[in-house]
Image (tube, rainbow, N blue to C red; front, side):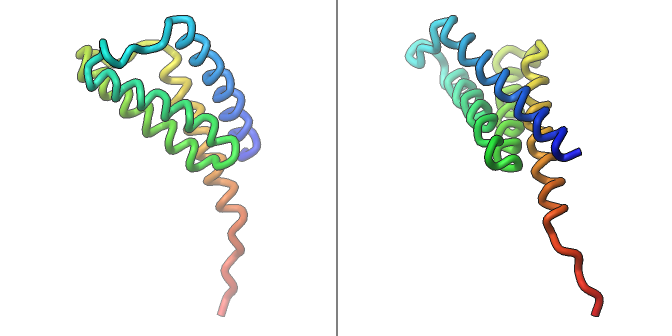
Length: 119
């Protein structure tokens, strides 16, 4: 189960990373001088989520936690800025990838612990 979750997280993570970077470059990036503070902070959270996708290749729990927490903050700010939650499967895919990575690391950590000996 941990192996399946690990590769689901990695596979969706790398696809999301590539797609997001290509989309960002195609749109021309972000001009911080023309954006509000909240929009700039939202952009920072999005890039932290992307960093979490990369970190989860080596440290599943840390990368997964960073991805999920950053995307939760991103979605909350989107709700504050536009009075509606973000729409689209992309945001759900970020949460899915982060949760798969986190759960994979959590399950593997549990398996590595030695069983307590009876006294």
